[in-house]
Image 1 (cartoon, helix red, strand yellow):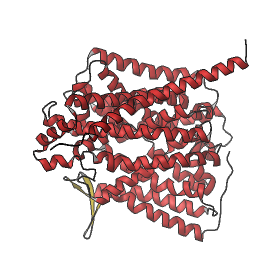
Image 2 (cartoon, each protein chain N blue to C red):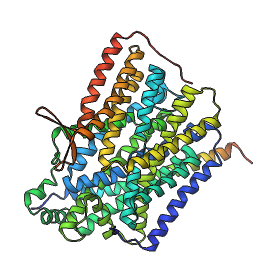
Image 3 (tube, rainbow over the protein chains, first blue to last red):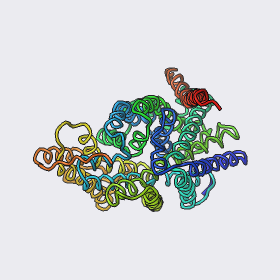
Length: 502
Length: 46
């Protein structure tokens, strides 16, 4: 495949220095860690600035960069108003809730432990399975492979493999300290480069009226171009929009967020971390959405050639950013992927090492043994991520599946377990979480094999009588049913579980 | 058709926040670390 952007040797040098520095940080912290708490929880000493960096960069990966810019390319400003704002609202909610989790579970390490303490081992195992599947880095692996193919023309599988090896090496060696420090650097690089691309690109093209002219040329009509500046929901159906918005609930049961909450130095620090993170998330979303829109306009103005939607971002920045800055931008894009991938590899390792091995199989295991099992869990997760990267076709499809899985399985036991004043019945957690996990997997397998593929909407559709259900609606159907199951089982159940923190 | 300049302004603000936000966080982080180090050195003289 032909590379979309041509890089100068200086750009390659900058990228090489960046990757080398990330690996160095991993080795630096591997020499300094003392025990498993230092490896997995960064000694529970993370302060607000580091928390902002790791929270923002972990949750925003290549899916946001390419996915949101792709939506901006097709749907205009609604990429920001319809897709990004529901997430922002939930970051604000988390700023208030996160300190409460830290206060209630001061010795906690993972989100799944809450389900274990409040509902017992079966619910702990079920939420751990969901967290493990959620934490596979399929999207990031797909993104790195896709990006290296765009830049160098190398095969997709080779790019995916190179990305996985680099991330695994420094996460394996340095643990959460290395992940947090690299996340912080990656946060700065990705934010600054996207901001630079926004200002330089928008100014170079001539501002909003030039963008509008470009969109008129591209779409061929005034009304189509006007559509790009309507903050409505674009071409999507209202139910799909609601389904996409509901995936934002994943913010509330995001395993990587919980690991960082528990690793924070105090409840106050985690609150400040989220509060400062909100304008960062917001500005990043805006820039990425508008860079996508800018790409569509640039095609209309014949500044860049006709490229695919997910290639427009690279084509437009390649057009305007000077040599050297382009290298920093590519490093920023890599940063987006790596900062997310390292966090989820560590979370996935924690599910195996902490949730399943230490908390359930061998509570007396020493730190070294738990660390070894955690690392083994990371390797399995990497292998699974690479395999899945070749299975799914669209990045957005992966995200909706993973969000459905974690929301339907973990949201109810974790939040009722933490905040409900009524006694929690063991059976309620098992049935609600079990239903969520099984129903999500069945729904996706069923719609993939028995649904019909809509070329117009690029989704799987299931037809029941006169009803047309999109694969994306799964989260809307399964979550309320899981809630009803929980409420009935909790009212009818008798046995309660209230394990104390380890 | 003329569009409101507010779009331009908002794009430049978003770009500026993306650049200045992380740099400000670095500044405050470094300042806090330096203060803590200074306090530590005062409390633990060589």
